[in-house]
Image (cartoon, one colour):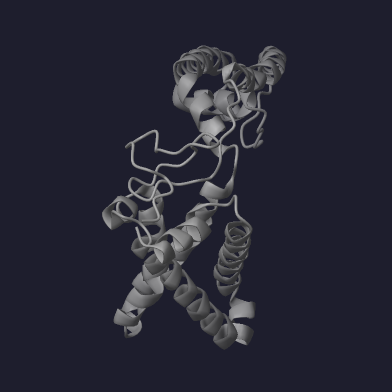
Length: 270
């Protein structure tokens, strides 16, 4: 890797340097502004008054993201490793709509054009790599997925039982016209959402509903406890934001010389 490529790589892919932090901050601001522009464009009154400004601003943001996308490709040893990575695909999806919208001309394409332009909201996913604890949370969720699956299955069983009981207790006039509809009511009640579209009328039904509501408060805390327990098991290891220029793997230990994924040198400036 040439020196200028290494320098560019350290700015774009790493946040431990002054230039890298500045780049990340500017990129985050640009992403948020872009999402705001998309949201404002969907408000008819605002779009009617500021359409030209929003359109011009969106093109500026798109050009900036295009430059960033090209720079990310040219500063890595294996461009395809970035292009076909998750974040590479997200970057491409969030950049293409403005260019592709030029191909949709005519009133018959307005619906497709609107849907295509809304894809720009995927830029919000570009924020994911900058959330420092996201990897820790994802690892905890993966480790606890079996326990959470068993818990969800248990809750589903309870909803089927309580929903069926409520169907037997209440009348159709109360809204409990079928077992599936009663199960829907139980799920809404157990999760403390409470839409109010269906409500028990008999004293026995109201008593059962009260028990379900109280049970709901205890059930909500269970997944949080499972994930928290998994997170506490993970020993904290000092890592940095350095990304391998060969395979794009990040989260290396401090003072690492070689990539823990592919074994290539991390700071090859030759």
